[in-house]
Image 1 (cartoon, rainbow, N blue to C red):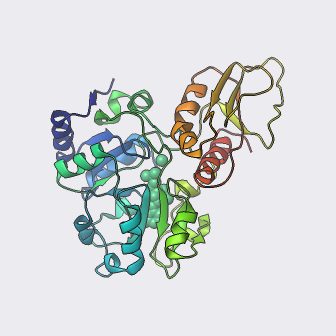
Image 2 (cartoon, rainbow, N blue to C red):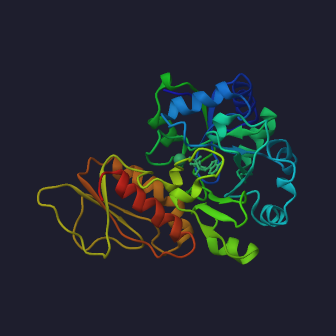
Image 3 (cartoon, protein in one colour):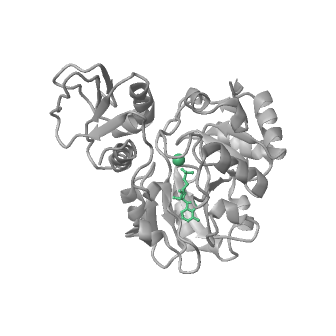
Length: 335
Ligand code: AMP
Ligand code: MG
């Protein structure tokens, strides 16, 4: 098993030295657990893609601990933009990733050959302490095999990888508070473009900087670069191994003789199910987001034939939750 250490000053130093040596460390952020590597070390980045079996067309998010670390990573004028400053003032540190024109310091592997780089300042104290201890920005996608359920606690990471996957250690910082990935906003074009729904609702961004365009898979194309298929934009992602069906109403469609699971928003199913998980008995969308992946992991381990998932209201964080559930359904093999 991969070593799992509670985050302490000592384990942070150990993790930092692993990163400095070009090796991989899994660590907590407020969104989900990340699989980190030194952002400017192409060889270390290659190990991330290998461990996750992540296609090289899918760029990584680079995590920084202070604003000064941004300048060397972006094109000279990019950090000075008025919208960039407004967004950083309001949402950093936190679950908002900004896509900006990149500098030469960022390896092409990190950006899948795109002329832009995705940057985020996480708010989790362990993530910030690790970046500072390492002394450089950390590139980190979610610490799970590509396309599968995201990890929101250290145990999810440990059970998803084997020792041979090249991960030196997992820092345990408890369960993730937000529980869904960051919102990704591109400021590389004339109009800001939302590339992924996530921990900061679009409405909060629009209240600050005005309307944003919604990026479709094809809209992620850059005129000058290759086209990434971002996971936020793939139709199937975040998938359990068990088939998952997103209900359009709260009635279930019993499948004779099968073991059925149920993921409810605030209440349980009408008929008995082999396993039931409730996202938030109070109907709180923040709590529902924080519980989403842990509930799905438990249902996925319950030996079920099918998981029914109830829709949640599509407001605030509910938009990101529904995005994950739709993609989980598609990724599990259900259209
Ligand atoms: P994750 O797998 O949660 O680390 O998210 C990585 C995602 O960030 C990618 O799949 C893209 O959606 C997005 N991303 C990273 N870099 C870029 C970029 N340069 N341009 C557009 N999207 C990016
Ligand atoms: Mg991911």
